[in-house]
Amino acid sequence: MRRRARVLAVRSRDLAARARDRIRAAREHDPHAWHHHHGPPDPYPVGIRAGADGSDGVPPPLGSPAPGAPDLDGALGPGGVSGPPAHPSADGAAPRPAGRGAAAGAEGVVPFGLRMAAAWSWRLIVVIAGFYALLWAAAYLAVVIVPVLVALLLSALLQPGAAGLARRGWPPSLAAFTMLLVGLAVVAGIITLVVERFTAGFADLAAQVSQGLEQVQTFVVRSFPISEGQLADLLTEAQDALLDNQDTLASGALTTAVTVGEVVTGIVLALFTLFFFLKDGRSIWLWLVGLFPAASRAYLDEAARRSWRTLISYVRATVVVALVDAVGIGIGLAVLGVPLVIPLAALVFLGAFVPIIGGFLAGTVAVLVALVSNGPITALIALAVVIGVMQLEGHVLQPLLLGRAVRVHPLAVVLAIAAGLLVGGIFGALIAVPTVACVNVAGTYLSRRHEGPRPPEPRPERARPVVAAG
Image (tube, rainbow, N blue to C red; front, side, top):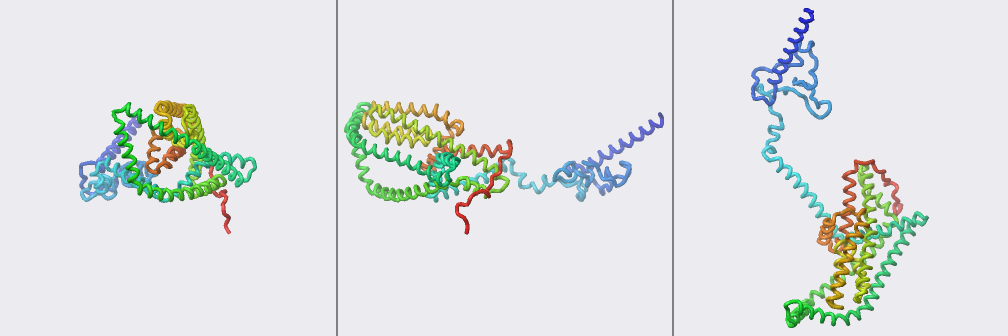
Protein backbone atom coordinates (compact mmCIF):
# COMPACT_ATOMS: atom_id res chain seq x y z
CA MET A 1 0.00 0.00 0.00
CA ARG A 2 2.81 2.43 0.85
CA ARG A 3 4.56 1.64 -2.43
CA ARG A 4 1.36 2.27 -4.35
CA ALA A 5 0.79 5.53 -2.51
CA ARG A 6 4.33 6.68 -3.34
CA VAL A 7 3.72 5.86 -7.06
CA LEU A 8 0.48 7.82 -7.05
CA ALA A 9 2.19 10.76 -5.34
CA VAL A 10 4.98 10.78 -7.95
CA ARG A 11 2.46 10.67 -10.77
CA SER A 12 0.47 13.46 -9.18
CA ARG A 13 3.51 15.67 -8.87
CA ASP A 14 4.49 14.85 -12.46
CA LEU A 15 1.01 15.73 -13.75
CA ALA A 16 0.95 18.95 -11.74
CA ALA A 17 4.38 19.94 -13.10
CA ARG A 18 3.26 19.23 -16.66
CA ALA A 19 0.12 21.29 -16.12
CA ARG A 20 2.10 24.24 -14.74
CA ASP A 21 4.50 24.03 -17.72
CA ARG A 22 1.62 24.05 -20.18
CA ILE A 23 -0.03 27.03 -18.49
CA ARG A 24 3.26 28.94 -18.40
CA ALA A 25 4.02 28.17 -22.06
CA ALA A 26 0.54 29.18 -23.15
CA ARG A 27 0.81 32.44 -21.20
CA GLU A 28 4.24 33.24 -22.63
CA HIS A 29 3.30 32.53 -26.22
CA ASP A 30 -0.24 33.95 -26.23
CA PRO A 31 -0.32 36.27 -29.31
CA HIS A 32 -3.05 38.41 -27.73
CA ALA A 33 -1.28 38.92 -24.37
CA TRP A 34 0.06 42.33 -23.29
CA HIS A 35 3.23 41.04 -21.66
CA HIS A 36 6.57 40.74 -23.44
CA HIS A 37 8.72 37.70 -23.25
CA HIS A 38 12.39 38.71 -22.98
CA GLY A 39 15.23 36.45 -23.78
CA PRO A 40 15.72 33.69 -26.33
CA PRO A 41 12.76 31.45 -27.09
CA ASP A 42 12.54 28.14 -25.38
CA PRO A 43 13.82 25.52 -27.84
CA TYR A 44 11.89 22.84 -26.02
CA PRO A 45 8.35 24.03 -25.42
CA VAL A 46 5.79 21.88 -23.75
CA GLY A 47 4.91 18.83 -25.74
CA ILE A 48 8.46 18.13 -27.01
CA ARG A 49 10.52 18.86 -23.86
CA ALA A 50 12.48 15.87 -22.74
CA GLY A 51 10.76 14.10 -19.91
CA ALA A 52 7.51 15.99 -20.30
CA ASP A 53 5.71 12.96 -21.64
CA GLY A 54 8.33 10.33 -20.96
CA SER A 55 10.06 10.41 -24.36
CA ASP A 56 12.08 12.75 -26.61
CA GLY A 57 11.17 13.97 -30.07
CA VAL A 58 7.52 12.92 -29.97
CA PRO A 59 5.34 15.16 -32.22
CA PRO A 60 3.14 17.53 -30.24
CA PRO A 61 -0.48 16.42 -29.91
CA LEU A 62 -3.41 17.85 -31.87
CA GLY A 63 -4.24 21.38 -30.70
CA SER A 64 -1.02 21.83 -28.72
CA PRO A 65 0.32 25.41 -28.44
CA ALA A 66 3.77 24.21 -29.52
CA PRO A 67 5.17 25.49 -32.84
CA GLY A 68 4.44 23.12 -35.71
CA ALA A 69 1.58 21.40 -33.89
CA PRO A 70 -1.35 20.55 -36.17
CA ASP A 71 -4.43 22.70 -35.59
CA LEU A 72 -7.91 21.31 -35.18
CA ASP A 73 -8.70 22.19 -38.80
CA GLY A 74 -5.33 21.30 -40.20
CA ALA A 75 -6.26 17.86 -41.46
CA LEU A 76 -9.90 18.75 -42.05
CA GLY A 77 -9.68 22.09 -43.76
CA PRO A 78 -7.36 24.84 -44.99
CA GLY A 79 -6.24 25.96 -41.53
CA GLY A 80 -2.66 26.35 -40.36
CA VAL A 81 -0.99 25.21 -37.18
CA SER A 82 -1.58 26.23 -33.62
CA GLY A 83 0.94 27.56 -31.14
CA PRO A 84 3.23 30.60 -31.26
CA PRO A 85 4.86 31.62 -34.54
CA ALA A 86 8.20 30.04 -35.33
CA HIS A 87 10.00 33.42 -35.58
CA PRO A 88 8.87 35.88 -32.91
CA SER A 89 9.68 39.54 -33.07
CA ALA A 90 12.87 41.06 -31.76
CA ASP A 91 11.44 41.76 -28.34
CA GLY A 92 10.20 38.21 -28.04
CA ALA A 93 6.53 39.05 -28.42
CA ALA A 94 4.51 37.19 -31.00
CA PRO A 95 3.33 39.39 -33.88
CA ARG A 96 -0.38 40.17 -34.08
CA PRO A 97 -2.47 38.17 -36.52
CA ALA A 98 -2.58 39.44 -40.10
CA GLY A 99 -6.32 39.99 -39.99
CA ARG A 100 -5.85 42.54 -37.19
CA GLY A 101 -2.85 44.25 -38.73
CA ALA A 102 -1.83 45.79 -42.00
CA ALA A 103 -4.00 43.55 -44.18
CA ALA A 104 -7.11 44.92 -42.52
CA GLY A 105 -5.83 48.49 -42.31
CA ALA A 106 -8.09 50.16 -44.91
CA GLU A 107 -11.06 47.86 -44.45
CA GLY A 108 -10.90 48.14 -40.69
CA VAL A 109 -11.64 51.86 -40.88
CA VAL A 110 -14.76 51.39 -43.09
CA PRO A 111 -17.80 50.11 -41.18
CA PHE A 112 -18.95 46.61 -42.03
CA GLY A 113 -22.43 47.78 -43.08
CA LEU A 114 -20.98 50.30 -45.53
CA ARG A 115 -18.69 47.65 -47.04
CA MET A 116 -21.65 45.32 -47.55
CA ALA A 117 -23.75 48.11 -49.09
CA ALA A 118 -20.92 48.97 -51.50
CA ALA A 119 -20.49 45.32 -52.49
CA TRP A 120 -24.20 44.96 -53.21
CA SER A 121 -24.36 48.33 -54.96
CA TRP A 122 -21.81 47.68 -57.68
CA ARG A 123 -23.28 44.26 -58.35
CA LEU A 124 -26.76 45.75 -58.71
CA ILE A 125 -25.36 48.42 -61.02
CA VAL A 126 -23.84 45.73 -63.24
CA VAL A 127 -27.12 43.77 -63.32
CA ILE A 128 -29.17 46.89 -64.15
CA ALA A 129 -26.70 47.90 -66.85
CA GLY A 130 -26.90 44.43 -68.39
CA PHE A 131 -30.70 44.48 -68.26
CA TYR A 132 -30.76 47.92 -69.89
CA ALA A 133 -28.44 46.73 -72.65
CA LEU A 134 -30.73 43.74 -73.20
CA LEU A 135 -33.79 45.99 -73.48
CA TRP A 136 -31.95 48.30 -75.87
CA ALA A 137 -31.00 45.36 -78.09
CA ALA A 138 -34.59 44.07 -77.97
CA ALA A 139 -35.93 47.49 -78.99
CA TYR A 140 -33.42 47.69 -81.83
CA LEU A 141 -34.43 44.22 -83.07
CA ALA A 142 -38.13 44.63 -82.31
CA VAL A 143 -39.08 43.82 -85.91
CA VAL A 144 -37.62 40.34 -85.38
CA ILE A 145 -38.25 39.74 -81.66
CA VAL A 146 -41.95 40.72 -81.65
CA PRO A 147 -42.96 38.18 -84.36
CA VAL A 148 -40.97 35.47 -82.58
CA LEU A 149 -42.76 36.16 -79.28
CA VAL A 150 -46.14 36.24 -81.03
CA ALA A 151 -45.31 32.90 -82.66
CA LEU A 152 -44.34 31.53 -79.24
CA LEU A 153 -47.70 32.54 -77.75
CA LEU A 154 -49.62 31.09 -80.69
CA SER A 155 -47.59 27.88 -80.57
CA ALA A 156 -48.57 27.48 -76.91
CA LEU A 157 -52.19 27.52 -78.11
CA LEU A 158 -51.74 25.28 -81.18
CA GLN A 159 -48.92 22.94 -80.09
CA PRO A 160 -51.16 20.52 -78.12
CA GLY A 161 -53.25 20.00 -81.26
CA ALA A 162 -50.17 19.42 -83.42
CA ALA A 163 -48.77 16.99 -80.84
CA GLY A 164 -52.08 15.09 -80.79
CA LEU A 165 -52.04 14.73 -84.58
CA ALA A 166 -48.42 13.55 -84.47
CA ARG A 167 -49.33 10.89 -81.88
CA ARG A 168 -51.98 9.60 -84.28
CA GLY A 169 -49.36 8.97 -86.95
CA TRP A 170 -49.38 12.23 -88.85
CA PRO A 171 -46.00 13.44 -90.13
CA PRO A 172 -44.73 16.36 -88.05
CA SER A 173 -44.70 18.72 -91.05
CA LEU A 174 -48.28 17.86 -92.00
CA ALA A 175 -49.51 18.17 -88.39
CA ALA A 176 -47.84 21.57 -87.98
CA PHE A 177 -49.16 22.83 -91.32
CA THR A 178 -52.70 21.65 -90.51
CA MET A 179 -52.78 23.45 -87.17
CA LEU A 180 -51.33 26.54 -88.83
CA LEU A 181 -54.14 26.51 -91.39
CA VAL A 182 -56.72 26.03 -88.63
CA GLY A 183 -55.36 29.04 -86.76
CA LEU A 184 -55.32 31.17 -89.90
CA ALA A 185 -58.87 30.15 -90.77
CA VAL A 186 -60.15 31.12 -87.32
CA VAL A 187 -58.38 34.50 -87.38
CA ALA A 188 -59.47 35.23 -90.94
CA GLY A 189 -63.07 34.31 -90.10
CA ILE A 190 -63.11 36.63 -87.08
CA ILE A 191 -61.59 39.51 -89.06
CA THR A 192 -64.05 39.01 -91.93
CA LEU A 193 -67.03 38.95 -89.59
CA VAL A 194 -65.87 42.06 -87.72
CA VAL A 195 -65.22 44.05 -90.91
CA GLU A 196 -68.54 42.99 -92.45
CA ARG A 197 -70.56 43.87 -89.36
CA PHE A 198 -68.69 47.15 -88.95
CA THR A 199 -69.45 48.11 -92.54
CA ALA A 200 -73.10 47.16 -92.16
CA GLY A 201 -73.56 48.95 -88.84
CA PHE A 202 -71.59 52.09 -89.61
CA ALA A 203 -74.51 53.68 -91.46
CA ASP A 204 -76.80 53.15 -88.46
CA LEU A 205 -74.13 54.50 -86.15
CA ALA A 206 -73.65 57.63 -88.26
CA ALA A 207 -77.39 58.25 -88.24
CA GLN A 208 -77.58 57.85 -84.46
CA VAL A 209 -74.47 59.86 -83.61
CA SER A 210 -76.05 63.27 -84.30
CA GLN A 211 -79.07 62.45 -82.16
CA GLY A 212 -76.85 60.98 -79.43
CA LEU A 213 -74.60 64.05 -79.42
CA GLU A 214 -77.62 66.28 -78.96
CA GLN A 215 -78.69 64.16 -76.00
CA VAL A 216 -75.21 64.32 -74.53
CA GLN A 217 -75.10 68.09 -75.02
CA THR A 218 -78.45 68.50 -73.31
CA PHE A 219 -77.35 66.23 -70.42
CA VAL A 220 -74.11 68.17 -69.94
CA VAL A 221 -75.83 71.54 -69.95
CA ARG A 222 -78.43 70.38 -67.43
CA SER A 223 -76.03 68.54 -65.13
CA PHE A 224 -72.99 70.83 -65.08
CA PRO A 225 -72.53 74.59 -64.68
CA ILE A 226 -71.88 75.23 -68.36
CA SER A 227 -73.98 76.95 -71.02
CA GLU A 228 -74.67 75.88 -74.59
CA GLY A 229 -72.52 78.73 -75.88
CA GLN A 230 -69.52 77.65 -73.84
CA LEU A 231 -69.96 74.05 -75.01
CA ALA A 232 -70.17 75.22 -78.62
CA ASP A 233 -66.97 77.24 -78.12
CA LEU A 234 -65.19 74.13 -76.83
CA LEU A 235 -66.27 72.15 -79.89
CA THR A 236 -65.11 74.97 -82.18
CA GLU A 237 -61.69 75.04 -80.46
CA ALA A 238 -61.37 71.28 -80.94
CA GLN A 239 -62.12 71.63 -84.66
CA ASP A 240 -59.58 74.47 -85.01
CA ALA A 241 -56.95 72.33 -83.25
CA LEU A 242 -57.49 69.56 -85.77
CA LEU A 243 -57.13 71.99 -88.67
CA ASP A 244 -53.97 73.52 -87.21
CA ASN A 245 -52.31 70.09 -86.91
CA GLN A 246 -52.88 68.91 -90.47
CA ASP A 247 -49.14 68.74 -91.15
CA THR A 248 -48.57 66.61 -88.07
CA LEU A 249 -51.40 64.32 -89.07
CA ALA A 250 -49.96 64.02 -92.58
CA SER A 251 -46.52 63.06 -91.26
CA GLY A 252 -48.26 60.60 -88.95
CA ALA A 253 -49.94 59.06 -91.99
CA LEU A 254 -46.53 58.55 -93.63
CA THR A 255 -45.23 56.94 -90.45
CA THR A 256 -48.32 54.71 -90.44
CA ALA A 257 -47.50 53.62 -93.98
CA VAL A 258 -44.04 52.58 -92.87
CA THR A 259 -45.57 50.83 -89.85
CA VAL A 260 -47.96 48.94 -92.14
CA GLY A 261 -44.96 47.62 -94.08
CA GLU A 262 -43.33 46.48 -90.85
CA VAL A 263 -46.58 44.84 -89.75
CA VAL A 264 -46.82 42.86 -92.99
CA THR A 265 -43.21 41.75 -92.63
CA GLY A 266 -43.84 40.81 -89.01
CA ILE A 267 -46.92 38.74 -89.90
CA VAL A 268 -45.00 36.76 -92.51
CA LEU A 269 -42.10 36.17 -90.12
CA ALA A 270 -44.48 35.16 -87.31
CA LEU A 271 -46.22 32.59 -89.51
CA PHE A 272 -42.89 31.17 -90.70
CA THR A 273 -41.59 30.95 -87.12
CA LEU A 274 -44.86 29.46 -85.87
CA PHE A 275 -44.66 26.62 -88.39
CA PHE A 276 -41.18 25.60 -87.25
CA PHE A 277 -42.11 25.96 -83.58
CA LEU A 278 -44.96 23.51 -84.16
CA LYS A 279 -42.82 21.16 -86.23
CA ASP A 280 -39.41 21.23 -84.50
CA GLY A 281 -40.01 23.00 -81.19
CA ARG A 282 -38.46 20.26 -79.06
CA SER A 283 -35.43 19.91 -81.34
CA ILE A 284 -34.83 23.66 -81.25
CA TRP A 285 -34.96 23.64 -77.46
CA LEU A 286 -32.60 20.65 -77.20
CA TRP A 287 -30.11 22.53 -79.36
CA LEU A 288 -30.39 25.59 -77.12
CA VAL A 289 -30.04 23.64 -73.88
CA GLY A 290 -26.99 21.90 -75.32
CA LEU A 291 -25.17 25.25 -75.27
CA PHE A 292 -25.20 25.26 -71.44
CA PRO A 293 -22.84 23.32 -69.15
CA ALA A 294 -23.70 19.63 -68.82
CA ALA A 295 -24.22 19.85 -65.04
CA SER A 296 -27.04 22.41 -65.39
CA ARG A 297 -28.87 21.04 -68.44
CA ALA A 298 -31.26 18.80 -66.54
CA TYR A 299 -32.41 21.60 -64.22
CA LEU A 300 -32.77 24.11 -67.07
CA ASP A 301 -34.76 21.60 -69.11
CA GLU A 302 -37.11 20.88 -66.21
CA ALA A 303 -37.57 24.61 -65.51
CA ALA A 304 -38.35 25.20 -69.20
CA ARG A 305 -40.85 22.31 -69.23
CA ARG A 306 -42.69 23.77 -66.23
CA SER A 307 -42.70 27.26 -67.77
CA TRP A 308 -44.02 25.87 -71.04
CA ARG A 309 -46.88 24.06 -69.28
CA THR A 310 -47.66 27.30 -67.44
CA LEU A 311 -47.70 29.25 -70.70
CA ILE A 312 -50.04 26.70 -72.33
CA SER A 313 -52.42 26.86 -69.36
CA TYR A 314 -52.29 30.66 -69.35
CA VAL A 315 -53.08 31.01 -73.07
CA ARG A 316 -55.94 28.51 -72.92
CA ALA A 317 -57.48 30.10 -69.84
CA THR A 318 -57.07 33.61 -71.27
CA VAL A 319 -58.87 32.59 -74.48
CA VAL A 320 -61.78 31.20 -72.46
CA VAL A 321 -61.95 34.32 -70.25
CA ALA A 322 -61.80 36.61 -73.30
CA LEU A 323 -64.55 34.64 -75.00
CA VAL A 324 -66.80 34.88 -71.94
CA ASP A 325 -66.16 38.64 -71.68
CA ALA A 326 -66.93 39.21 -75.34
CA VAL A 327 -70.11 37.13 -75.28
CA GLY A 328 -71.37 38.68 -72.02
CA ILE A 329 -70.75 42.29 -73.02
CA GLY A 330 -71.96 41.63 -76.57
CA ILE A 331 -75.27 40.21 -75.34
CA GLY A 332 -75.74 43.21 -73.05
CA LEU A 333 -75.07 45.67 -75.87
CA ALA A 334 -77.41 43.80 -78.22
CA VAL A 335 -80.23 43.91 -75.65
CA LEU A 336 -79.69 47.67 -75.20
CA GLY A 337 -79.80 48.22 -78.97
CA VAL A 338 -76.26 49.60 -79.25
CA PRO A 339 -74.89 49.51 -82.84
CA LEU A 340 -71.69 47.71 -83.87
CA VAL A 341 -72.23 44.92 -81.36
CA ILE A 342 -69.97 42.35 -83.04
CA PRO A 343 -67.04 44.75 -83.64
CA LEU A 344 -67.27 45.93 -80.03
CA ALA A 345 -67.43 42.33 -78.79
CA ALA A 346 -64.34 41.51 -80.87
CA LEU A 347 -62.57 44.51 -79.33
CA VAL A 348 -63.48 43.22 -75.85
CA PHE A 349 -62.15 39.77 -76.83
CA LEU A 350 -58.79 41.22 -77.85
CA GLY A 351 -58.62 43.52 -74.84
CA ALA A 352 -59.18 40.64 -72.42
CA PHE A 353 -55.72 39.27 -73.29
CA VAL A 354 -54.38 42.06 -71.05
CA PRO A 355 -55.67 40.91 -67.64
CA ILE A 356 -57.61 43.16 -65.25
CA ILE A 357 -57.45 46.37 -67.29
CA GLY A 358 -57.66 45.29 -70.95
CA GLY A 359 -61.25 44.08 -70.92
CA PHE A 360 -62.39 47.07 -68.87
CA LEU A 361 -60.82 49.56 -71.30
CA ALA A 362 -62.42 47.78 -74.26
CA GLY A 363 -65.74 47.84 -72.41
CA THR A 364 -65.29 51.57 -71.87
CA VAL A 365 -65.17 52.03 -75.64
CA ALA A 366 -68.48 50.19 -75.86
CA VAL A 367 -69.92 52.50 -73.20
CA LEU A 368 -68.79 55.56 -75.19
CA VAL A 369 -70.43 54.18 -78.33
CA ALA A 370 -73.62 53.63 -76.33
CA LEU A 371 -73.35 57.18 -75.02
CA VAL A 372 -73.11 58.86 -78.44
CA SER A 373 -75.63 56.56 -80.08
CA ASN A 374 -78.31 55.90 -77.45
CA GLY A 375 -77.81 58.55 -74.80
CA PRO A 376 -76.57 58.70 -71.21
CA ILE A 377 -79.14 56.35 -69.66
CA THR A 378 -78.24 53.53 -72.03
CA ALA A 379 -74.55 54.28 -71.44
CA LEU A 380 -75.00 53.92 -67.67
CA ILE A 381 -76.74 50.58 -68.14
CA ALA A 382 -73.93 49.45 -70.50
CA LEU A 383 -71.38 50.51 -67.88
CA ALA A 384 -73.17 48.38 -65.29
CA VAL A 385 -73.06 45.42 -67.69
CA VAL A 386 -69.33 45.88 -68.24
CA ILE A 387 -68.64 46.10 -64.50
CA GLY A 388 -70.74 42.99 -63.84
CA VAL A 389 -68.85 40.97 -66.47
CA MET A 390 -65.52 42.20 -65.09
CA GLN A 391 -66.56 41.10 -61.60
CA LEU A 392 -67.49 37.67 -62.95
CA GLU A 393 -64.09 37.47 -64.62
CA GLY A 394 -62.10 38.59 -61.59
CA HIS A 395 -63.88 36.56 -58.88
CA VAL A 396 -64.95 33.40 -60.72
CA LEU A 397 -63.24 32.77 -64.04
CA GLN A 398 -59.67 33.81 -63.29
CA PRO A 399 -59.41 32.00 -59.92
CA LEU A 400 -61.03 28.92 -61.45
CA LEU A 401 -59.07 28.79 -64.71
CA LEU A 402 -55.84 30.64 -63.92
CA GLY A 403 -55.48 29.96 -60.20
CA ARG A 404 -53.43 26.78 -60.46
CA ALA A 405 -51.47 27.70 -63.57
CA VAL A 406 -50.56 31.32 -62.83
CA ARG A 407 -50.02 31.99 -59.12
CA VAL A 408 -49.22 35.69 -59.32
CA HIS A 409 -50.57 38.31 -56.94
CA PRO A 410 -52.91 40.91 -58.53
CA LEU A 411 -50.53 43.68 -57.48
CA ALA A 412 -47.72 41.96 -59.37
CA VAL A 413 -50.02 41.66 -62.40
CA VAL A 414 -50.87 45.38 -62.39
CA LEU A 415 -47.23 46.41 -61.90
CA ALA A 416 -46.10 44.04 -64.65
CA ILE A 417 -48.67 45.46 -67.06
CA ALA A 418 -47.63 49.02 -66.18
CA ALA A 419 -43.97 48.17 -66.75
CA GLY A 420 -44.85 46.43 -70.01
CA LEU A 421 -46.76 49.49 -71.23
CA LEU A 422 -43.83 51.72 -70.33
CA VAL A 423 -41.23 49.53 -72.01
CA GLY A 424 -43.04 47.96 -74.96
CA GLY A 425 -46.38 49.71 -75.36
CA ILE A 426 -49.44 47.57 -76.08
CA PHE A 427 -47.35 44.54 -76.99
CA GLY A 428 -45.40 44.90 -73.75
CA ALA A 429 -48.64 44.89 -71.77
CA LEU A 430 -49.76 41.80 -73.72
CA ILE A 431 -46.72 39.68 -72.86
CA ALA A 432 -46.06 41.11 -69.38
CA VAL A 433 -48.26 38.72 -67.39
CA PRO A 434 -47.24 35.46 -69.14
CA THR A 435 -43.61 36.52 -68.83
CA VAL A 436 -43.97 37.13 -65.10
CA ALA A 437 -45.84 33.84 -64.66
CA CYS A 438 -43.19 31.80 -66.50
CA VAL A 439 -40.31 33.52 -64.73
CA ASN A 440 -42.03 32.92 -61.39
CA VAL A 441 -42.44 29.20 -62.06
CA ALA A 442 -38.91 28.72 -63.40
CA GLY A 443 -37.28 30.78 -60.66
CA THR A 444 -39.17 28.98 -57.90
CA TYR A 445 -38.11 25.58 -59.24
CA LEU A 446 -34.46 26.55 -59.74
CA SER A 447 -34.24 27.99 -56.21
CA ARG A 448 -35.49 24.67 -54.78
CA ARG A 449 -33.99 22.31 -57.33
CA HIS A 450 -31.98 20.33 -54.75
CA GLU A 451 -35.00 19.55 -52.56
CA GLY A 452 -36.23 16.77 -54.86
CA PRO A 453 -34.76 14.10 -57.13
CA ARG A 454 -32.64 15.12 -60.08
CA PRO A 455 -34.73 15.42 -63.26
CA PRO A 456 -33.93 13.29 -66.30
CA GLU A 457 -31.06 14.42 -68.46
CA PRO A 458 -31.96 16.00 -71.82
CA ARG A 459 -30.30 14.59 -74.91
CA PRO A 460 -29.11 17.46 -77.12
CA GLU A 461 -27.62 14.98 -79.53
CA ARG A 462 -31.14 13.87 -80.42
CA ALA A 463 -31.99 17.29 -81.84
CA ARG A 464 -32.80 16.79 -85.50
CA PRO A 465 -31.03 19.31 -87.72
CA VAL A 466 -33.50 21.15 -89.91
CA VAL A 467 -30.99 21.43 -92.76
CA ALA A 468 -28.58 18.55 -93.30
CA ALA A 469 -24.92 19.42 -93.89
CA GLY A 470 -23.19 18.61 -97.15
